[in-house]
Image 1: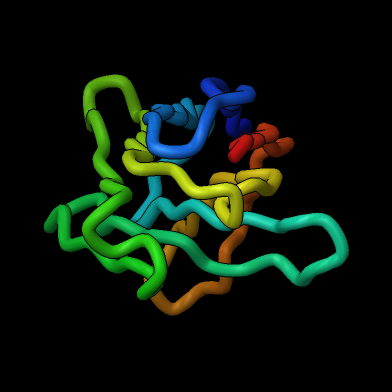
Image 2 (image 1 turned 135 degrees about the vertical axis):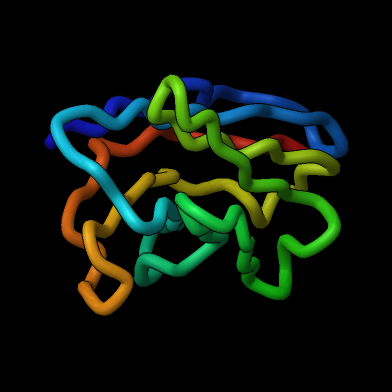
Length: 116
């Protein structure tokens, strides 16, 4: 299984970015985004069910971030709007094969930096 992330960068507060995570080599039940800011632990951001498209969000990103997927491309997206400096982090995508699993596979991470 391989996850390839793209879309990170340096942006100003209040603007938007869209992250992509292309998955290959398997079939999955859920995809998710996590992030890790400098000196902090990795935290959950959002997740999506591959079959039902149900979505789940961490409270601080609700209403600003949207997770979506393209089954044909086996790709998970994270649309991030109204970005804040506290959103600055390395963003990782992850997938799991079974709903009961832990997150089995992780991407390499992509840096998002939001300047004030």
